Image (cartoon, rainbow over all chains, first blue to last red; front, side, top):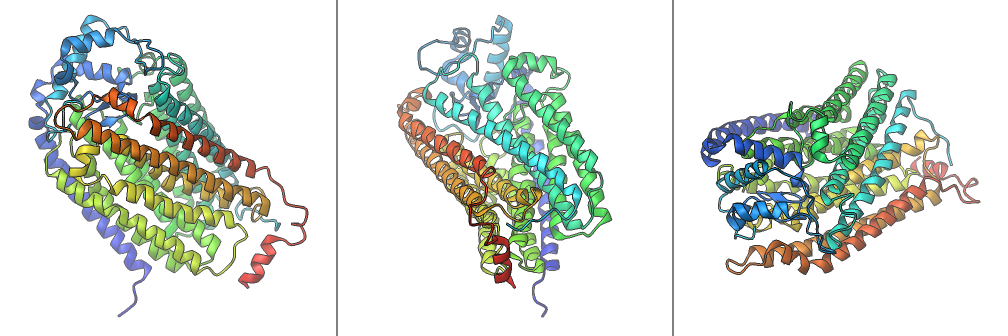
Length: 140
Length: 476
């Protein structure tokens, strides 16, 4: 038998890569089909879409996590709707920055009342995503 | 010191890329230190530089300088491997200035304009892509990245086509093509957050745990071939096996990010199994590096480059392999997801795998680009010190963040009743955050030592006993 050479190693690379790419694509295809149900996509209203846009254009992910992803400087907001409720969320955003010396500060974004409602709708929808019971408790 | 010049004149474009990469690296660390301090002095620089802005600069600079390093490495390696001049040195230089200017403009945009205004000014309402972690760049910058990447790929693909085709150049090309193609998912931003996150990982995970590993493998193999003189056949075999394992484990390993973001539960199994296998290619890389150094056929005069290369393999295994493994299983990740454990892993993985391999490449190539086979021994001593100081600094940071993460999980995640709120927990972690700042300061010190090494000349006696000649005699 010929000894193991670099051509054989190369073939393992090509074969393995192609196989796993195809497998990955197949699973992603199945996942795509399940996303609507798992994320309650029927409940994505125009307000939710606008809220997501606000979330992105204020770079909230630069301090907070959302469903566990983002920066770890400020609290998780995937379940903030459940933890704090709509009125608290709006009042909190309006009251920023706290100005407490030494404490982490959140910028003032000067949102309109309608924009605050959109953000709350986005958090409310996000809270309803099926995350396999994550986070472990209300503190996120 | 033995003089040496690049074998192909066009390789010298790499020098621009390497110098800019190091410059941006310094910027990244300065902002990193700022962030570390903001963890303990929350209102530092507020409202001038809020945390999210500093973080965006820190992570975007990291990406840009590593890309600069990869590009410089490609321009250096490809002509030498293909044994022909670069297809268009002019295009390479032009794209460098385009990339640098676009990068600088983007960073200035982050710092000088509120992010929402920046989004508005740059057409984000037309095609929304901003405000997602690591993909914060304005639309024109994203388009610019694609243009620069395509230009680079055209240039080096044409070079490879007209010359010798080696395993290293093919793997490097595949890595860079994959990098460019997967970046196209940065333009995909569905309004459904779950779907958004799923495609977002196509860029983020399949870059750093997929195609970037091809680039890493090619760079490491190149430096090892040059500094050890081991046969290509042996190194090619290793290279293919390592990248085969990297993709076999890494592609489905994407699943370890799909546990709790709204995707089906079967990802818990797929992600856990393949995530757990992901350390294998890194372990093989460590074996590979030590094996090649042991079988070396020459004592290369540039021992600093050998240290960086071996350091890459070891630290990549610890950071990407081991620190990834500790929280990759879904039942563990359930508690550690999005905690400081993630931050610890991210820092060590990027440092070990990508920062070190780019420096290894620069360390090998830069002396040659400056007209000598290796740096003077004194300069190499500074380089080696900088390796140890930066690595120890990083270790302090990573151990601090790991400890902070464990405590955070203990106080905030594990209790089913009466768990501490996020900010209260953060107050409990102050000691570890301070020691992280200490590690960061040490890291910056190591970086300054590294910068100094570029300006250190030979000792008085070194001209008489040239390192290169002595190395050659041993090799003969």
